[in-house]
Amino acid sequence: MSDLLDPSRRARDTLDSDQSRPLTASGHLRRRQLVSRLIEASHTVSALLAVAVLTIVVYSVASRGASALSIDFLTKGPPVLPDTPGGGIAPEIIGTALLMVMATLIAMPVGILIALYLTEFAGPRLARVIRLALDLMNGLPTIVVGLFVFGLLVVGHYQSGFAGALALAIIMLPLIARATQEVLLRVPSDLREAADALGVSRWRTVRGVILPTARGGIMTATVLALARASGETAPLIFTCSIFSNTVSLHIFGQAVPNIPVYIFNASEAADPYGFARAWGAGLVLLLFILVASLGARMLLTDRRSASGGSGLA
Image (tube, rainbow, N blue to C red; front, top):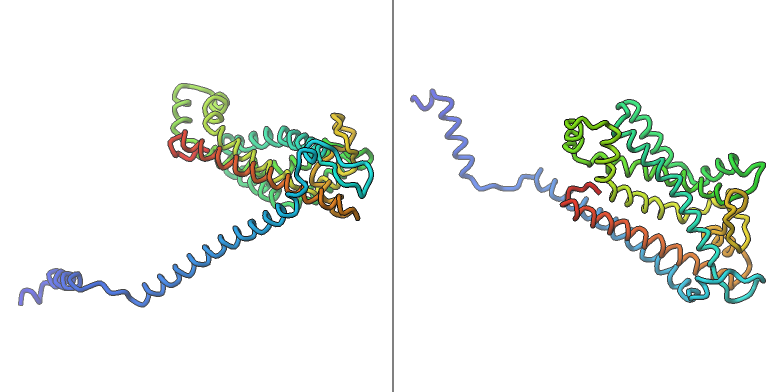
């Protein structure tokens, strides 16, 4: 009788009897497991599809451009006369490297300063506005960037290597800034607090503690942005497409030969030899992008290993 009047004991007995029963899957659990398997399978198929597309593109370019690769192709310029076999893309390789160096020198300092301001000095409301502006810049069509620089520097003047480098720098800027911001946010707050406890100024903390800690990640972000911008053609058509087969250091008044525009021009010309050279130039550009991307990943991995897996890179 006392057991019937004691609700707590009756609840304990019911719980003990429930725990002694074997666990069986309910309909909800089976449905969740099915949905989980379907989503996992869709993710696997999507990843395999992306790898397959990349493999097809690489194989297509390599199979058509491998026959054009040679020492002469990398060290000589295009032939003077059309419909002539032989020749190479040495001026275009040098010009592309020059454009990318100039674009990096423009975009990298500005991107790092923007990231530092976002993480160390800006208020929450202003930081949201700047991040939104960077995301919009990152999604801006590159042909619009080329048209903007065309109206800014080319109209009324001449196409130039500096105009092309500036267009590429605008493309690289949001990538460097956003990636560097994420790297700086991963720097342990203990380092900042220790510097504050020693009475170090904020700028000296940034210069002596935060930047050295995040150096590997910043370099990785820069290399990835470099690989992203190196294949852009639309901005260079507006700003740096009328060039000769010689590279000049007069970058503010003369266009610089570059691989993307050369591929565009050679593929549009009625020259079978030029078309073959265009495939070879595409293979060279593809190899550069692949090497740069793999180098960035290796740099990121080495940096994480050196930092004990803290993810500062």
